[in-house]
Length: 322
Image (cartoon, rainbow, N blue to C red; front, side):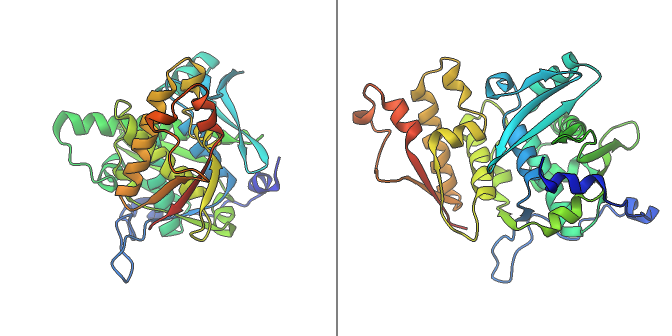
């Protein structure tokens, strides 16, 4: 396992004053703007721990097994390739059956929760934070009220608790410690594993546009969910505004949707949803995505025998717009 993770085991614990747990106000949020009025977004660390967590969440949910998750001893686990290195992510529970149920309950909302957490920790420089479920909905610009908002806050609470049971690499200690405050479970104390913040501070940075949070997280909003996953993947993969070049099949595997083809689904439906997701990324001013050496691989005249394989083997070129 890489020294990136082994550094966490020997890190010293930073002593905390009780006032740190009481200061829940955000000193810098996702919607802050730069001097020219553009959204500043989330400055995320390009660290394998964050990539591994994002990738594991993208592959979670109802299609987790087809996406590569497997049952382990008292856990569910998946091995992802981060760069040239295989990295294991594990979701722990009281037993394997419970872990498997929790894994399948992961929703795309977990990606928003993790993104907001990263923003808060990076903006404040702290290792411990008091968060409320309402804070995540506000960051998403959610304007739901009444029973619907309460249900969303409860779902955020469940996603937070699952994040607190995810481990990366060969370590047994989760990267995040999550503890509910009070009986309502709408507020939580979240702390980073000792040494993780130092690793993040030493890593290069990638900017995540806050518009990615605006995409719908509901599973029946297929193109929006795919745009959210694709946008996060491309944002973490890019460097210094340079284009990202990847095989279509590689991208689909990384964001946990290639399993749809393996399960016998029609390639046309996935391709259509992918094209719609790409269009939404462009409409939001996030990325333009083209195929290297080709103008159109998904037109009606191109969808002849073998077209799905040609599409999966084609190279995407994604250029950031913001």
